[in-house]
Image (tube, rainbow, N blue to C red; front, top):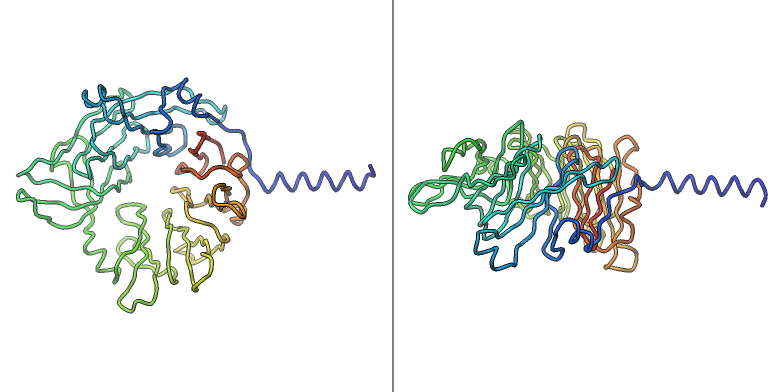
Length: 364
């Protein structure tokens, strides 16, 4: 082989390395999850990663009738991770008695997990240290309360939920984002913080989809009275900021000042995947990806996008993009040509978890 050929091969290999990301990963198939951690794979779901990706929360619907009779309807898994060593250090479990599991929110310090269930009529709290579950709110007929949607937030040291307050006659007193004081009980634990009805008036249209960052910041696709397509706006600290418009806008996820979304601008065209900084108005066109995008909620400087493999709807490949690289997409080596599944990203953008036929947890 000539020296020139060797150089070309080295250059080619180096280019492949730069266009993909692989730091090793934790990989567990259904057998390993069952044997090591007692997971019943077909009923298991991943819920969220902690802020720095050192903890994974999972959930499993119980089918054992004897356990259900004891009030053990859902099993909550807490996996403590050492992502640098590609290890699950340990796992812990707790049970909750929801008839239906809706949503979970983890505090930034990883100490408490707020759980919403029973179509928003019951809220429980899991102390991660003791793994004890306590009910902090449950609907009681004839008493005032708060009905939660499956939307929860953690912001500046406090939990928040979206829904509506109701009086003792069970009539709504308006839609709110409410602060949740986990040290209190019943309706006194809710403090109405943001009036959603007023936000809707500010937006000036019907909401088709939305994504909340904090009680005071969110992204909304709206349809106005002109019916001239959908318009993407940010509602930031009481101000409405116009972002984009098209025939349809879907798959919103965002951080404080950046939002990623899919927009269809013309009939019979593929959606564009756009990342926009709503303050500087800088825009990055990432390509034509399907939904399921993720973004680092802390700063929006890391995103994950995905596409079906060419000619198939049964395999997908995932890509990451970073601010420091001008948001040029790079293949995530461990997530190429995989069966479609559920992916989550830590708030700092450093760790992902993916569940399909296997559980894969890796670094970005």
